[in-house]
Amino acid sequence: MATKSRITTAPIDPARVLASVTDPAAGGTVLFLGTVRNSNEGRPVRGLEYQVYREMAEKRMVQIEGEVKAKWPVRKISMVHRYGKLGIGDISVAVAVSAPHRAEAFEACRYAIDTVKRSLPLWKKEAYVSGKGAWVKGDPIRG
Amino acid sequence: MATKSRITTAPIDPARVLASVTDPAAGGTVLFLGTVRNSNEGRPVRGLEYQVYREMAEKRMVQIEGEVKAKWPVRKISMVHRYGKLGIGDISVAVAVSAPHRAEAFEACRYAIDTVKRSLPLWKKEAYVSGKGAWVKGDPIRG
Amino acid sequence: MKVRALYFASARDLAATPAETLSLPEGASVEDLVQAALKLHPKLKAVMGSSKLSVNVEVVPAGTRLRDGDKVGFLPPVAGG
Amino acid sequence: MKVRALYFASARDLAATPAETLSLPEGASVEDLVQAALKLHPKLKAVMGSSKLSVNVEVVPAGTRLRDGDKVGFLPPVAGG
Image (cartoon, rainbow over the protein chains, first blue to last red):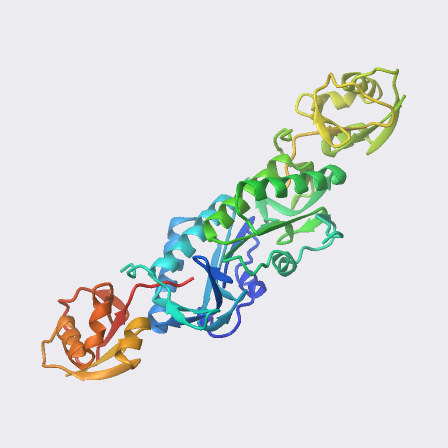
């Protein structure tokens, strides 16, 4: 998986993400998919545009994967985040974790996506149905 | 989805399960896959054979889906359980939940699979590498 | 009346049949059905302590009255997933 | 020395450029770079209070010393996922 790209403009294929964490010693696999919703805070949304500090994001994702493996007995973890313009229903982020048992797979996957949300240098601009757009208010990046 | 079968001998296709919960108002989707492990309690396993009380299992799955929808603001939920002979790595069960936000998608999916494990009339016999087999010790079905 | 007994997992192995039809007197309970099954398959006793019973896909107490055509499931401890 | 400033999201909009190279005296800090950037793009001030700064993909305090060729990221509050 040396050529694996964690940050991409290509559509995310959940089957491929799942295939990358298959393991004969895994009894449970949890996949999280983030998808673009048709509204946010009551406002109709047409789509999103993600901007990323790619070099930094890739490094952080590798760090998060290592952290997860240190905290839980997971077999494999795989994550990918898309950037550029996305439409309603498009997958923006996928995190898959395989583990011997389901409890640790759920916990590890939840931790991974929560950490991705807080600590990746990624920004999104909502395109409203009204025609305007705005950067989604976020939180300072976790250092 | 009137013809949707929740109990099947056919291989489970995660992409199809995911497709059945896509929803334009969903921001988070969580998929759980149970897979056959190559060992259990330290003993090498060749495969599993599932037996099911199909009529009762289907009814319970519909009940669980309704319960989940009542407890969390999920958009869609889909579950399928395979029976018959399965090999290492084969998917035995899949539960997918889509919801506006990830917290409820994780909680609802976790609840659904935990309830499936406790309350479905399903039994599994392990085929050991040693050649013998045994019914996996379970818990009394939750009434 | 006639009631269908459905055996699963270890109960099926011990009864050496997946299902059979048993004749019971009117007013018989699930417990009566279990006793009739135990007479036919004494080995079943080994799993009855940990098993639950269902009538027409609902888990019920042993005192439940049966009706003609009911299906009674012998359900050992479950382990799906 | 020359340092590369990288602007993201609202900082990019306000600077009206994704990146630029700034000349700074030897020994300059991240804070000195920020002041130089604010002179070129006064509007940037609106987001500096809530933004973090990175040097070569690590988030750093404003007092961090810079070296020739460093890349400094202007990182407004993030919202990925």
